[in-house]
Amino acid sequence: MTSAFTDATTRVPLPMAGGEMAVLTGNGLKLVGDDPSVGITLTSVSDPDTSFFIPPVKVSPNTPKKLQFSLPAGVTEGEWTVQVTTQYSSGSTLTKEPRTFTLPHPIVVGEVTEPGGSDDDDSGQGTFG
Image 1 (cartoon, helix red, strand yellow):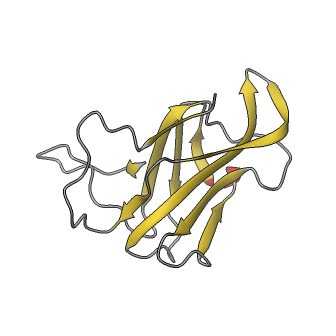
Image 2 (image 1 turned 90 degrees about the vertical axis):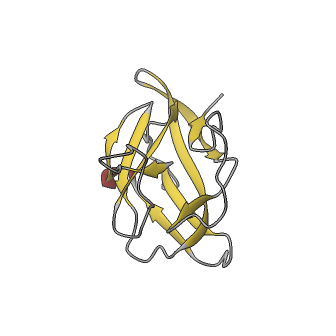
Image 3 (image 1 turned 180 degrees about the vertical axis):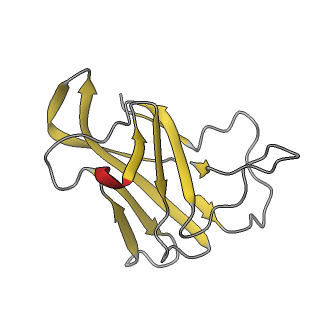
């Protein structure tokens, strides 16, 4: 998951911030289904009692490979776990029960204070198996 905005010179994604657009890429991500858990959940690593839910209607585009949405204004600087819950399977087929994928590494909101992962780090991508 990265900021939807990039530096015009370096083409590197800008730091993410509350109220700004974020993009999540991967496979099988489309948010569909009638279960109320379908959506994106952000949970603070430092304060697990603080979480935000982004419903499918607040995500556009909402495709199997790309989810774009505004981070809630209350998302503060720090690390956040990201969970995607969907009933998407393929085409117009839905799974009976929702499936949840958690990104393997927390995302960082605000300035990154430590060196990030390597170029082959897929921590911003999600795949449902």
